[in-house]
Length: 182
Image (cartoon, rainbow, N blue to C red; front, side, top):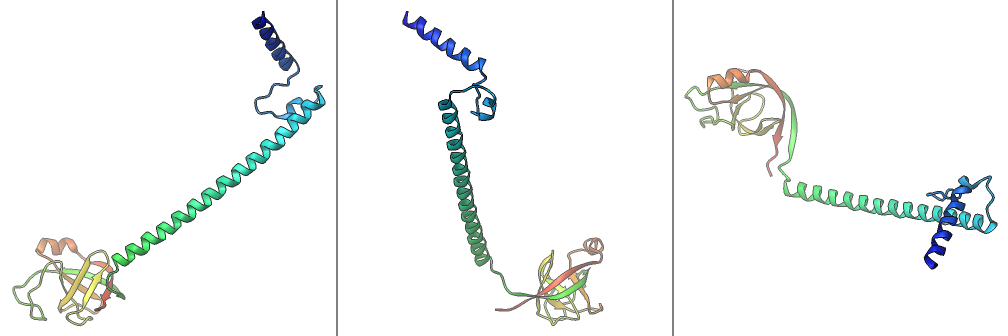
């Protein structure tokens, strides 16, 4: 008998809710406008709506603060990592000399103007930079001016290992830096 009474009460309550459109999943009080509600119910709905709005605003502010703190922490870590990397990889000081035309040459069997024999990936010939100058050619790496030649002032001749490499190298341009000695 108790189960039957509870079931009838529950079904009657649901019927009442559906009949008067008082059931709304998001508790939107706009759904109740124009319907007869008990004043206590309206007050309860309104106070719940205000409380939920305040909770929503507080949660959004807390999320925003947490996001801002995390972003600041990430910026700090990134800067720290970059500083450590820069310290670790701090190379020699370099000064831009300018943009040079690059060509390639091969061994003649004779030593360079500096007295040493040319080495691939190391020796360059240049008339506008002093012999022994360490340079960095952007995109190619470090070289040492160990030879001179018949080229003009804005040209660097890169020593390569074969005639085919010299032909395929052709004529290129790149920024050249002098590597400062410590």
